[in-house]
Structure formats: C-alpha cells, structure tokens
Length: 437
Image (cartoon, one colour):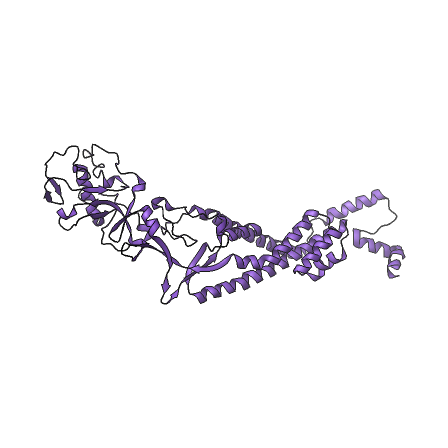
C-alpha cells in the first residue's frame, strides 16, 4: 500500500524516487535534452571532493598494505624453503634433519632428501635446544595462536569477501535463501555450514561456477587449518654425532680428523712413534675441533721457512717425500744406500716409509712448487683419489665407509634430561605456504 502510493503519487514524489536512483528528476523534456543534461551533470561532478573520499582512500591504502605485506611475507618464506635444500650452510655434522647418520666425506653436502615423501610427517626443520616442558609449551601456544587464531582470522576475511561477491551475484542471478542466510547472516565455518553451502550451490548456484568452487575450497581449508597447523609442527630430540671407536667408546664427531700420511716407521725419528699419523692440519693430540674446521688444510705460506705452527710437521713430511719418495722406496733421484735427512736428523737407508692417502692440495706432495726453480720434476698429484680419504678415530685409521658404518646420532642431555628441538615438517610447511600464497 505504501509502496503503491510512492510510485503512483504526484510527479514530484515519483521524480524524487528516481533521482535517488539515477541522479536526476524526470520532466517533459526530450530524451536528447535529458542526455545532454546527464552528460553535463557527470562532467561537473567528476573530480569534486566528497566527504567520504578520504575515508575510502585510507581504507583502500590499508587494504593494499595488508595484502602486499602478506604476499611478500609468504613469498619470502616460499623462496627460503626453495633455497633450503641447496644447503649453503658451513655445518659439517653428519646428523641429518631426520636423525639419521649420513657421511660421505667432503661431498656429503646435499645428501639429505628434503623432498622425499617419507619426510612428510618428520620434523626436519628444527631450531633451539629446549627442555621437554618448554618444547611442549611452544607447541600448545602455536596450536592456540596460529591454529585457532589463524582459522578465526581467515574466516573473518573470507566471509567478508563472500558477502561482497554475493551482492554482485544477486544482481544477475538469484540465489537460494539458505545460501544468502549462511553467507550474509550466519557467517559460520562449521562442517554443517560448509555442507549446507555446497548443497545450496548445487540447487541454485551463483553467477560464477569457478567462484562457487573457490568458496567451497576456501571453507574446507579454513575448517581443516587447525589440523594442518598442528600436524606440521612438533619437537624432536637434539642429536649429536658420534663414531664408535675400536675400544667401544663413542668418539664425538668433531674429534676425528682427516689424515694426510702415516709414517710406518716413525719410531726412527725423535718425538714420533710407529705408525704415526700426520693430519691435514694440526697434530694427533688435538682432541676437538669445530665442524667448520674439519677439512682445514695447510695451503698457504709466505716463504720456505715461514709456515703456520700447526703445519710444520706437514711441511717437513711434504719436503721429505718430494726428495725421497713415498712408501720407503726412494725417489727418482735417490740412490740405493743413500742417507736421508728429516727434521735435522740423518737417517740411514732405507728412507722413511710414508704412506699417503688423499692429498687435497700441492702443499702435501709438491711443497716447493710455488718457488722459482724448486718445482718437483713430477708435478702431478699421485694421491688425488678422493675415495682414499681417511680419518683418525681415536688411535685407529678409518676410511669414509668405516665412519659411515660406525657413526651414530644420539640425543644429548642437559643434566639428567634430554634436550629437544622445536620445528616444522619441511614438506608440510612448503605445501601450506603454497596454499596460503
């Protein structure tokens, strides 16, 4: 009744109603005149400041900043996860993220299969060293803040977008009452609401089928987000690498060292003994070195008589084998029965029996090559096979296969309790990052 009065009343009432819709009052003017007036009205009103313009601009800027920050953050995390398997770290510990001991010598890097399906539920990205209580507390806080909080935030943002699209869709195509109620008023992301929303789409869909599929997928993702967020995190014991010695003791991995030579008859020289090991750097009495120093070599000097303190023995042995050869057989220029000289000591025939393994730089086999007129007549490295890489473990010699076979990763204790790392499953975190981007 009231509506009829509005549309059937005086011309003024009718005109006022139309003006609220189209912006002008109709009259008896021709359509051409009205068209020109409409155009003039649009041109004169274009660019004029309105009271709501500034508020709209600030809201738009905030939305752009939020969306840009979110996309950049997720993109940065995605780039980090893609670069992580390349392993740019200097860490040489053979304890892999999955807790297994894997050692392949110098070429060990990149041996862990980050993309292997078996690691989907393993915590392969761990940080820190925590007690069990602290790790569990972090786990609970993550579930509450990220799991439930993230679900709530995603639901608020998604349903707001759904409402805006529903308003656009209703202009071109009607929707089911249940769909309008769920999106516009109820705003519930429960399993029952998701089922009702999908049923409504099948009965009377929206204007775009792609948008309907996207809505259903978004609702399901929001519903399952706390489960995914909880599944991809956890805590695992903090492991340390050990190698079983021949006496049954566990030797810390940083205590092993690569060997350049073994002097079989080292007891012929003062301060040495039989089967004396000569390391790449330092001496056999060193009990610990950092993992980053494991493959340090003696490869720099200023002159013949100026060598690092922990490389003097290596220099003397290198100079000796350059003159008299390896394995006690003598060199090309060594005569049978000739006396040799080592560390200011004269030795009778035969020469020292120096057994060499993998030699990484010319310092160990052609020490004088960088000095004019003193290069060896045989400049090629006779021990360049990296498979001959050998280590000193306790007082025994282990090759790479021996270290791998006897290696083990065990949790370390802080007092009487085991320490833990808290972190993520690499694969699950990568999948979730892709879904959220």
